[in-house]
Amino acid sequence: MARYALVVGISDYKSNYLKNLSKPIGDAEAIAQLLRDHGQCERVTVLSGHVTAEELEDALTQLIQQDAARNEAFIYFTGHGLAVKGGLGGTKGYLATSDCTVTIENNQPKRQTKAISFSDLNDLICDSDLSSLVMFIDACHSGELIESELVERSFAELNSEQDYYLITSCRGHESAWAKKREDHSVFTGAVLDVLVPEKVNNKGYISGDTVFAHLDEALKNSRQEPRRFGKGRALPIVWFQGRQQNGEEIYGSVADTEKKSRRNWGIPLQMPPLPEHFVERPEHQDKVKEQLLCDDKKTFGTLVVSAIYGLGGIGKSVLASKLAHDDEVQARFADGILWSTLGQNPDILPLLSGWIQALGDHDYKPTAVEAASNHLRTLLYDKKALLVVDDVWNPAHLEPFRVGGNGCCVLVTTRQAKIPEAHKYSLNVMTPEQALELMTQKLKEELSAEDRQQALDFAARVGYLPLALELAASQIEEGVTWTELFEDFQDEVVRLEALDLYGREDIPDDAKRRKYSLTACFNLSLKQLSAEQLRQFAWLGIVPEDVSLTQEMAVMLWQVSKRQAGSILRTFSSKALLLLGAKQAGPEARRTFRMHDLMHDLAQRLLVSAPQPLQEGDLPGLGMTKAESP
Image (cartoon, rainbow, N blue to C red; front, side, top):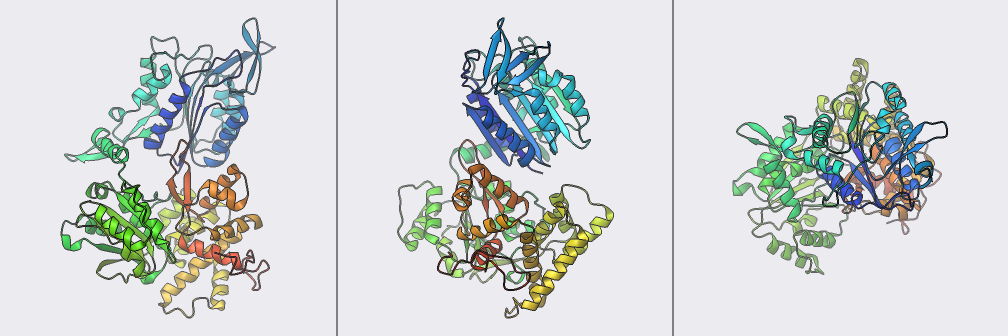
């Protein structure tokens, strides 16, 4: 289950009643960085400085109703709060935005425009499909959100499976304070003081209850009293990675410092993130890891991870990524992990140049592959680095990347498994239990006995291929029944076999059946898209397969707004049509996306396919000519 965070720190206000604030920008960045490092967040969105009502409303709606739907949401707000007394005597609480206006009568706010009311925020939350919500509000009168009977009554009516934990910096009639000599506000400073490795519990995280207990004590003699409201299970706020010492798990300090030092000293860790619905496969992970960590120099060199009979979609890249994320592997290769994805027609020179720059040499500008490879060999001569070369189709493409010294190792994923002088390892398909776990994770709920059996039957029919299983689970998640999915799948496989797509390929029958199964799952998923979504997917064939897809690139590709582009990318990711990529640098740390090479091939075929399909059941394409397509 993914977690999405929105951190807001508003410092600039146009209203004469609201003074500009010095702390919110720094408070917001400190909280956001903590969440990036230890919050296990898919994305941390930051709004700081000048934030209008429209920007804040859009961000809250995007987070609560879209990004975090059936997922976990985290909100941290720091800025001005308002308590406005209505004409009938009631008082309402508001979050002040940069463009809000306040009308004052008798030195008290009487009316406002463009502030966000706590009651509207409450309604937005109650109408959502969140799995859980953690919310901190560091603002004057923020306790109004919790102390309102309406809020408590509304939250009591929420789904019993939803968990909520809200903390405000003061009661409804109180102000929140900041001291000039301190870097942060009183409340946020106390929050940061408790979110440290030393406060972690034996499960490796710091809970909302631990945070509030500290706040209650830390603010006891201040002019503000924090308030809380909780429902459901205890919710973690942050996690700290642990390490084994004397047989016990030790959290924070050394293990955390080691990770921070790798990042702070610029040691490259280029591997992509693990998929959201990752399933451990120890029978393969442990064997490959053992080879990577072996001190026998004869085992150094190239380690090939190949799928059975070269079939795609079996999980080669995920296995490599899992190993690259392993703490012991990172400790063994202390000078970093470099990663390049090649594909069928790689542009090798920019990939080698990227490795050179990742190793800290920004002055060298190679103009030829051989020169770049030789320079890398010099840079890596005395280094301990893991070099991952993903999706190798042609053994010749790998040679420029085989540049490490004795302290390095090259890890390759390929369908061919014909890399000379390599230790070859064949990756098998998932077990039935692993397949069921993957689909259960994707569906975010336990399956009934009947559904479990249908899921296992379908997994067996598609050959236990992880990519096919995710595509299938996405359709079930959207309301297709197992019976309908099985019928549609059987019909599509029959149609593909009649076309004899893979008849000429010299591969065993079981591998050919899996290829037909995977293609059928692709096609069924794409047929669930709207006509416009299918066109947008086809345009992804323009993008080189080894390039990370950013929101900015999608804006240019689809000619839509930045927000629309982000929504489309997330939709394709939720349907397993796109893979998650690394986060971008910068305050928003937006997630990038990648295409599985099989998906990229399909998108490229759609570029040149006829808009009006010639064969029944074929997908409509864009009708581009070969010269027009990439």
